[in-house]
Amino acid sequence: MKTVIVNASRSYDILIENNSLRKAGKEISKRVPACTAAIVTDSIVDALYAETLSASLQQAGFHVVKFVFQSGESSKNLAVFGQILEFLAQQQLTKSDLVVALGGGVTGDMAGFAASVYLRGIRLVQIPTTLLAAIDASVGGKTAVNLAAGKNLAGTFYQPGFVLCDPATFATLPEAVFAEGVAEAIKYGVIASPRLFDKLAGGNAHNDLEDSIEQCISIKRDLVMRDEFDNGDRQLLNFGHTIGHAVEHCSGYSITHGYAVAIGMALISTAAWRLGLSETDCSGPIKACLAANHLPVSSPFTVEQLAGAALHDKKRRQDSMNLVIPQKIGQCVLYQIPVSALPDFIREGVGKEP
Image (cartoon, one colour):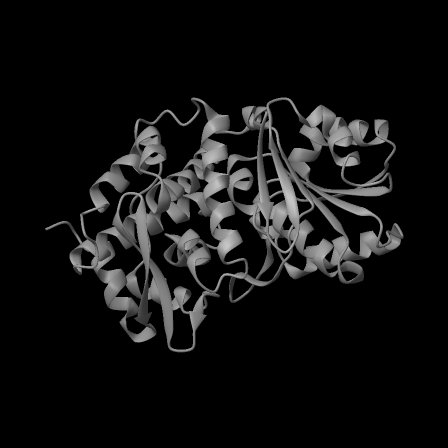
């Protein structure tokens, strides 16, 4: 068992242990008195793990109710979000009750957002069942849904009270879905850990997975504790995301988050080197690492399409936005760029190799 402690506006533990889902109820009961626990999950995870979680909660004295939505990014919208809130109200949950997010990033984002606004905030536990959610969405308190104009444009900062990560649940993931999480892990390596990056560059992400998860979460924990509300250093976690979110949006979310972020990292690192913004050429190692983990390194969309979509990114500040630029593997900086210069920057990233 590994434990990472987050001290933000709410202090909480992140437990990382194989086969820990069956004792989730016991662990949650150490932190929350017996109450109604509303499990929010998607249609795929429901069939795999909801029964185990429900039984564990019931054995610990919790009354369990469950809301299931259709799996996929297309469900991450205001309509489904509203259905979750109506379900919590119909079940008469009170301020002393609990929302348990069981699933991937979509589930964590929507259940967390619902917990943050229902009765102006009730208890929240995150139980990620994908690598991507374990090292990203379940930690740090960002919650959101997508709007027609772009990704994650409506949401809140709302820290969970507890996070339980059982890497054994990743065994049921298709390799393509597991690879999405590897893309985010590569991001952590680029921004803060050459050791993690080198490990992933070998294409053996499954090896010693608990250690990799702990490294990623610890990096995010440190940045969140310095900048909980994303006004400074925490923005380093957005490496690859501004272009990545544009790729997702342009594809109608048929290109999933991890793959889109991989494309974003490749484009950003290429443009940064060509424009003289990096100390070393990180694009080669980053692209090789992505390829070793079966992740894409090029965009199917035009410069104009990507730039237009990126203008709706939530990190935009009036006529400028911050991009995350790798200086060398393990170190990134924030670089403010005028919105008007974004198309030329992206053009450098997607241009043909000299």
